[in-house]
Image: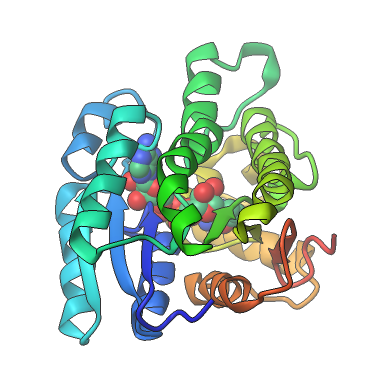
Length: 276
Ligand code: NAD
């Protein structure tokens, strides 16, 4: 698909990987909807284990993209709620006259041993990381069917291999890859392509506010600080010896948007950390 002039929704776009993806599409000439929790974050943060993106982060991302000459509108969404997903799609179509590309990037994590992992955390992870893809894709489909279209799901290397203390997150990302393959098989008849990108280790809030702090990781790598833990993981586990940047993940998303003969793949972007 030609990116220049296309309309794209990117979820979880206020910061981190989603922000990098939104910036890359805007730079390639797309009309971008940057979608994130915005003011809804304060309601959810009370229940979660690290801060989700606040309203000013979403507005700042959109205005910085516009400041560099890109086309970008910020819209609030909670991808785990049907009505919110329908509202996002309706407002996006109203803003840009249609919808060509959907990037399901919003995601959350919580780690811990299965033996006492909270059921509520399991349910919230699946509500965002799996049901969020289903709900928003379902809301977007009538518009994508009209235009052909592309769906890209941001899964993870944790969707290809299990890691200790990451049962809920890994299961949700395996599910995201399964959903990607099912949608690719089902939607090919409408010329809609569905692919996933599986990031490796990206220096974002998810990593630094949560993963690097996990006691299990610090024990495993013999480290005490979040920086040391991140560095140790890269040094010991990534063949290319370097972390991934949001721009690396964005480049894969742009490739999969343009690759007319590719559907159903889950492309690892991990410096060799995961080779399947
Ligand atoms: P992040 O926490 O910086 O960004 C996630 C964004 O999703 C936040 O802006 C948050 O507000 C938003 N979000 C959370 N719940 C939402 C909801 N219900 N509705 C709408 N938005 C919501 O994390 P990130 O590292 O940028 O993660 C982006 C994606 O990449 C996630 O799907 C994550 O699982 C995946 N990923 C990250 C890494 C990594 O190393 N950082 C590795 C593999 C996969």
